[in-house]
Amino acid sequence: MNHPQILIIEDDDLQHEIYEEALGGYRLARATTASEALKTLAGNRPNLIILDHILAKGELGLDYLAEFKELLPHVPIIIVSGALEVHQQMHALQGPRRAHYCITKPVDLNELRRTVETAFAECGEAEVVRQFEALERSRRVDVQELLSRSTDRLSRQTQIRQMLATIDERPNISALARQFKVARRTIIRDLQELIRRGEMDPEVYPRWQSDDDEAEADAKE
Image (cartoon, rainbow, N blue to C red):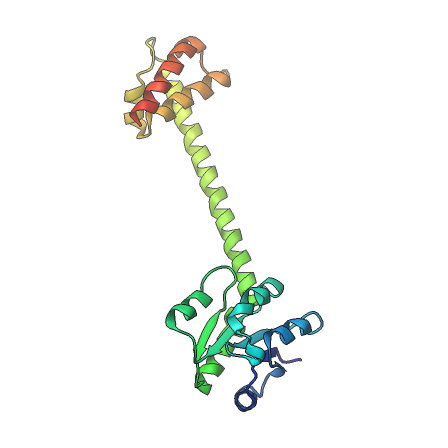
């Protein structure tokens, strides 16, 4: 089984040797500039990127962060630098085209290993799967809530129809709203639906009264 590949974008040879020692269990690829790294992505997709901020040819790693995320939106990126201010680190970790982690130099090798392990466990494809699962759960909750609301509405309308069948006077909207603990507008719409479905005589709640009451309900709410 192939080990995950890490693309290290680092121009300092000594620093790269440190990465090689710390991350020997992974397949490592190297680029000394971000522009060079971008050219290699089409044919060599890494599973994780370690991106130094100060690079050769005057390039700044953060300037290329958006391009990396555009090409590899689900590949975790670890920014490594001793030159970033706190607000720059925060900016790098925020927004849709963000890095996943920031590590300061000099690099603590134990922290680096832990961060890489966490990135592989929590980010990338694992993160995509969790996002889909969360979306599916959210959809199920939405459907259940809609079904619950529909059931409550039909039950309330049935009770209203049965109550009004036993009286001759026109319905008291406010009293019904208090009884069922809903807004006056909700009761009005219940009556309108009952009439549309043919379950209530329109004379029980004529259209002109419906318009007036709905306007009054809107004004009160």
